[in-house]
Image 1 (spheres, helix red, strand yellow):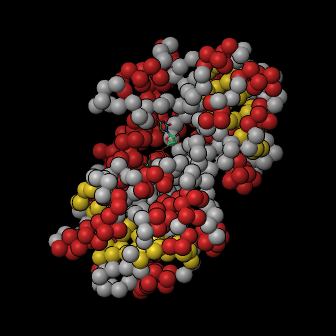
Image 2: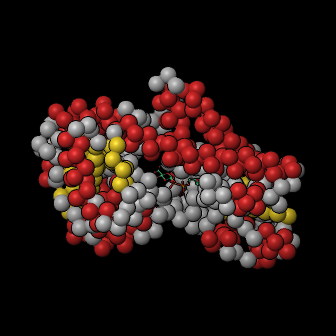
Length: 437
Ligand code: UGA
């Protein structure tokens, strides 16, 4: 089939390449000429394992352009633009509205527009009128991909969710998207068809649940800290109950990235608009617990060093999670910036995140006190303390004996509980975990 994908960020670019992998002819459209240029050359504009290879493998079926009129040659149009957080916490719909407005003049009767962006409940209903006027059908098909596993999650999703309009038009939309995803469905992927509102809510409910799980275990970590309990053992023990499950119960410095934090805030803002804000008040607590985790690391360092001012501190990790160069709302970078603002000299190391972080550090006016590098050993040279803020494998595999020899004081704060505490202690480190020591 001929498919267009409007928006070529993490979601859209991976979706475009994955649709080409399924055998479709795909046109990716984005307003950013540099991004399009890079994609057109087969070079991934961000770090995502397996994505470069997918782009190259499917180059013959992939075109990228900034010209929205290219969508006129295709019959299925995915909308995968961003919905960043507005100043008031709600989702900024500028790009989604712009994408639909830009697409409508190029739609033909019978075309299918498939929304993938994470949107406030009620959006699809509102936009459907514009698409229907052009004789096309709108449906919503939320995406559940995780950065770092984006290619796998797109081609082998846990489930497919279709939000469709009522009546036969909904059946038509389902049939067309089934054809697009035929190979995925052939692998017995569960596919759930529902109305617009349910599909929109599924996405924010899933992210809210995940965020709640993380903040729950982080609350337990704080309790563990004052009681001498071990939060990792606690998570293991409760996780054996299949009703609870062990995944997303890793305590640490909390969640970040372009999705979980903004989605819970956007959900709260939307519920308030709908007059039911109170029912989601627990999500504010989830957000508060999450932000407290970042302050907690600075507090632990202050306990260990007396004062962070004037101290050299190494931070391993800049990206919000390993195997990603995404620094949006990254707890690791936030902590490094807080330490720099508190008067420490900070060297942050990350295999990928160091590149995008440089510009942000300069914008924040912190380049005198916060430097970034890809070399995690260079970062600890002469440092009084090390904070492990993103659990890259290369950090976990590091030999603490070597690191001990490079530092002036042997203090390690394991912000992700990802180190082998025994071997770091054996190397002479004062080890501080998050809810375990
Ligand atoms: C998240 C969801 O997991 C995806 O299902 C969803 O599709 C995506 O948002 C989205 O809305 O587009 P992602 O942002 O890639 O995916 O990251 P996650 O793997 O969910 O991790 C989020 C944050 O939680 C990271 O900072 C991670 O370090 C943290 N985390 C995760 C914990 O602190 N503890 C855990 O146990 C798990």
